[in-house]
Amino acid sequence: MWTRQYRPRKTGRLIVPALAAVVLSYFGYHVYHGEFGINSKDQLRARATVLQAQLDRTRSERVALEGKVRMLRDGSIDKDMLDEQARRALNLSHADEVTIMLPSQAN
Image 1: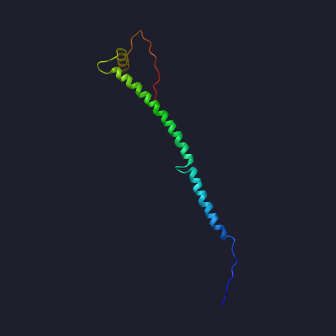
Image 2: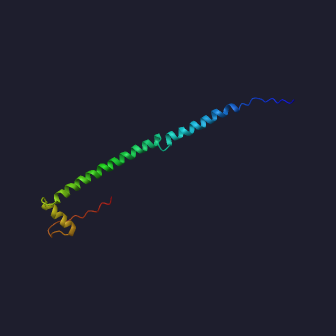
Image 3: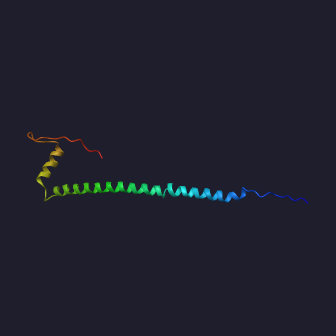
């Protein structure tokens, strides 16, 4: 009868801890850099701040435009606003007026 005797391997004891370290490092990387990780959370907060500022600016422009429209409604037309809008639409001015041309703002 043949019997084989094996020496205990030292590498067998390292397989499970090595696999555990690989799995933990994988998940650790994605905790920080993943789609919903810590780094992405900071980027989303910064983006939310920028978008909130843009929303506030747009709301203030809307309020200003609503004020101008309110002055042009029937029954309460402001003569100065009507004159300003007519001159802008027709691109006209009086001979004794000074016209300052400003570059158009492309947003």
